Picture 1 (spheres, rainbow, N blue to C red):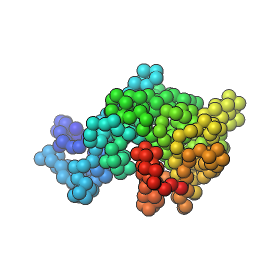
Picture 2 (spheres, rainbow, N blue to C red):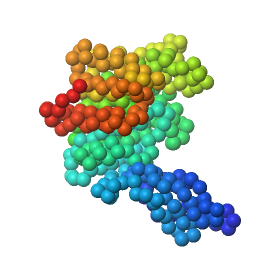
Picture 3 (cartoon, one colour):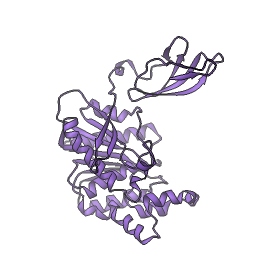
Length: 338
């Protein structure tokens, strides 16, 4: 619903797929609105809305004909956690009756939010028969300041319990096989995968970490000087190394110091030019795991930073993730991994 300022009346928008219209510009007559249509069933595209006729048309269909109508739309669910608080999430279901394998895909941040947006990797996983759950665990934005503050000095604590609660809900809520649930994420989501591996070592079948934090203290110490303006926020979440109580928290919630507890297969993918979560965060984690002969697989992508900008590098990361899951979730022992 938008509003006709001159007439003082609301203008009803045409029906759209679940998602968001992000306005770009009005025509000179104010009859037409150009907007981005953001949904989880297709890449973002431009639509022209005729506000007088109540119609909308896409300038171009972003999907090739073979893929149109085949994408899974997320269901909005709210999952009770350990303290009865509800965790908002998007649930993507494959066709069939199950029991299904599942991937819990945790966003970065931690002060961020997963929204109804198109993700090629999630859609690919659903097409292979995975249930995909995308939770906004405590600490996420979009649900009020109190919810966002719930992970202050509690990374790897309450938010990880939320992820465990999500897994247990999936068993009945989405007919998921309890033996084949994976935690996956990038940046803070990668930290959550590492935390799940270290602090709930037998809860999940496998873990996928894209450029995740393994050591909170060295993360905070590596932040550039010009981030000093954000010091209050940083210390609220990650702790202040100069504060003895915070230093204890940083040690106890850093997966790097608990590698002896990790028993489930782990995939780590890292850019060697990452200035935010530096290469050493992953190098040290993998080195300690390999010293124990733990099942860890590691890909360092040359020339990439915090996230992968080149299509070929994103494909390399996704293809390796696919093979990793084929081996450890679908049991294909012939899959070769680094």
